[in-house]
Length: 71
Image (cartoon, rainbow, N blue to C red; front, side, top):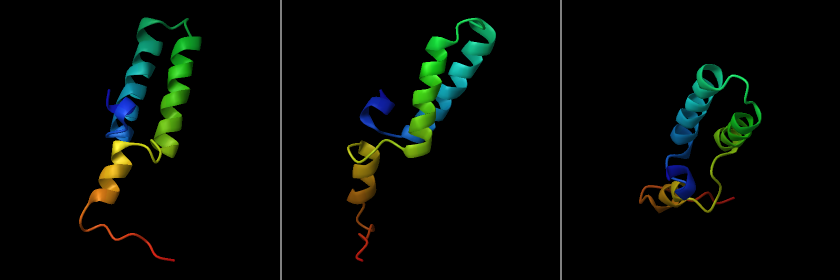
């Protein structure tokens, strides 16, 4: 649910990625397509973040001490 809303995306994606790796290695070692797809999506979210339409971005810009860049 956190990833769907874009809240705490990095922590959520990393914890789900760890869970996916454990499931892949210990529970279903022969099933690569499904966990591989999940891992690819979670690695993308870890690398690029949730995007502009997320609660993470909204909270970052909503902070009273946040000064927007002017250049």
